[in-house]
Image 1 (cartoon, rainbow, N blue to C red):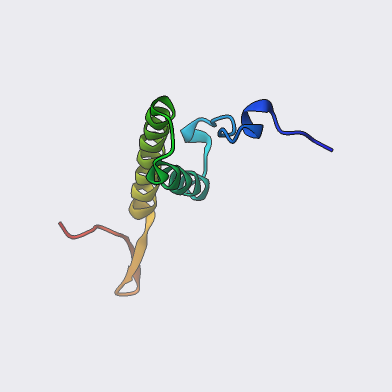
Image 2: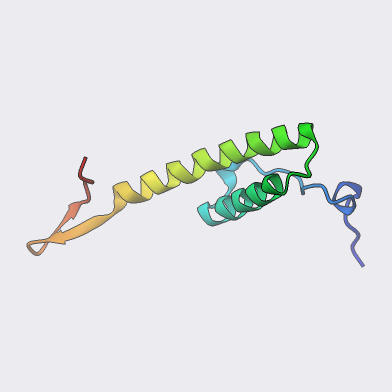
Length: 88
C-alpha cells in the first residue's frame, strides 16, 4: 500500500509543478483550492505567503491561456471565418 510523503501526511501541499507545465483546468483547480485554504484563515504566515505567491503565478497562467484562447476564436461573418477582435 503506497504511503504519502511525510509532508502530505501532515496536510501540506503536494510538490509544486511549474505553472507553465499545468493545463488551464489544473491551474484553475489548484487556484480555487489555494483560495479556499487562504479564506479558511488557518494557514501560518509563511504558508500564506507561499500560497499567495503560487496563486499569483497560477492567476497569470490562467489569464495568459484565456487571452491566447480568445485570440484564436474565429467567428463566422458573411460565410467567412475571421479572427475575433473584442470591442474596446
